[in-house]
Image (cartoon, rainbow, N blue to C red):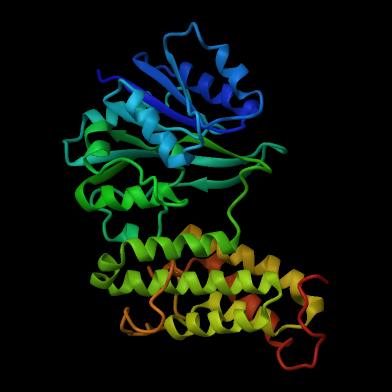
Length: 372
């Protein structure tokens, strides 16, 4: 049976990293090691890691200078002995059978397959409630679909063949963030993916790892688009979607900053690309009176979460906008979808949002002010 190495980068997570190590050591699969890279922590993380100094299953490396998440993952991989590399966030946890199930699946696949991921949940550390469920549904050749959206969560479920990891050069240390999506695009161009459907990973949500802001997500999608611009030119629909989402998120971020003019510009660009319910809802939010802003923003964020979950961005007009993906400003991050998923919940919420928002348009409400 192949040896498995769990790669665990950590930085100032003394209260979490010990649990990540223990979740590896409690696996029912025996031939496994935990490789932890401390990226220059200044809290009690080194003391926590010292507790495992005598355990041969735990390998610890410390970066003298901060290398970031990509550099730390790469250093962990270099120090690992395993033929199969598992990604593990320092605050995430695994079901005891997770690795065994994945090894069994990987052994049944040929070398065309680079990654086996699993289902999972996201839970609130504070309440213990399930916040999100991750249900894998993409297997085999997932390219160019992976250009549209990552949707291979949770990343802590990924098991990667070392040979494939090394063939694509590991994580890109020049990429600011979103390194999981970036590397999986490169993997998907050359290899296939498979999954174990059971929820075997718990992504734990707390105040230091909450979802990225709209502004940081918009930047990420811009970086992805710029790096893989040639590939997006070959796949116009993916280009349309990533640019739509970039402008939608940029508009939302501008709205949060109080930059209404900037929000309108980005919203107009998003509408040019896709007349989706989400973009129309965002337009209503910008035109609504200040008294309704917070309620509308909460509803909009729920819609955005649903759109990301379903990776769909149905056109409100019932059709598609056929455009040249290279026209306009050329920047775009991940679009609102475009796979045509019209779930009952999404459609109901979107229509309720739209109908509820129209009454605030042009009624002379108070000026927009995000601070109110």
